[in-house]
Image (cartoon, rainbow, N blue to C red):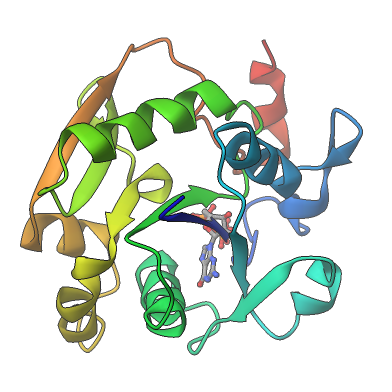
Length: 190
Ligand SMILES: Nc1nc2c(ncn2[C@@H]2O[C@H](COP(=O)(O)OP(=O)(O)OP(=O)(O)O)[C@@H](O)[C@H]2O)c(=O)[nH]1
């Protein structure tokens, strides 16, 4: 498969009060839900982008260390793409590590769209018109734009505004992109 997976796992969890990525969900640390979803969709090369401080917790995985710790997802994506640019991958399927209901079918739908829209730079899921850039597939051709943007920007929006993003709508009641920010967010457990 020409797709690699990338789990964003280097945030501060300041709203949660402690590192949310390791909270138990269905008997496993929360971030592992994102890995399982990608594996179910057939992605076998999965990387975790994190910082030096959290890296020991991911020692059984392929880890990429943020060049700018706590620099945000755009910079984390840039660091990962630079590190992976010499490899054979065409697309990078990104998932946040704090999405308990993400599943393989959702990732498969995004991967299917990479085949249907091979000239797009990003397959950008949306729910109710809301962009979901932390759960998008990025073509490696985004790298030159990323190199320029990280010099001055920090938002993912800057990237999907700068390149050709194909919007992939999901139903408004689709749970897969719901993320945990605060402990009380678990009450949405379906
Ligand atoms: N590698 C990496 N991942 C990040 C970074 N910032 C956020 N993430 C990840 O991106 C996902 C969404 O993060 P947010 O909830 O927006 O931010 P957070 O820092 O984790 O939490 P807050 O401090 O409460 O904003 C989570 O899986 C984070 O671990 C970063 O600078 N580097």
